[in-house]
Image (cartoon, rainbow, N blue to C red):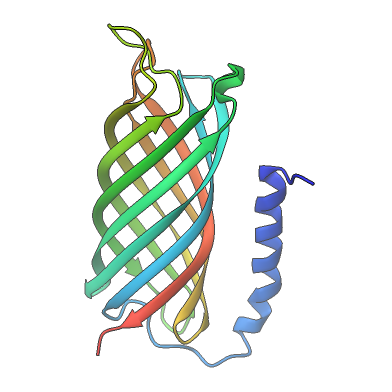
Length: 199
């Protein structure tokens, strides 16, 4: 049985919502903004377009590595992938791999277990298993600059583990499309964070 993207997001939200009362029954962990290394694994749903105004959903995931070094500031690397079998009802599939790097800031309100973060990343997008029109005959793959701006919220559930309750990112790519050669994507994700504090 296949579950729709909306169904998966609702299921993830329900699990998070049911887990929130447990946070009030546990002792407060150390501040999330302390120096350390975090590894995050996310499921994501991505609202994409081939040309402006022609939207479709892709599914995928991300692996992120974030090192916090000074007062909540850190450096982050993100590798993500997304897939659809039918981009814009064209009958043509699309796969994307995006690698980005950049600064991230994390902040936790006083006496609260959760933490908010924001990030600005730049890197490379690689589209493949599709059709990319250009001046020469259409290609099956293409590269472009990628820019991400977004943030989210983490909920600690154990000393070194958190739930990424929500992450929302605007992703801009510039893959060939015979129009503007610009794509604006909205990526929503949730997952698990493992933290390795610095000694």
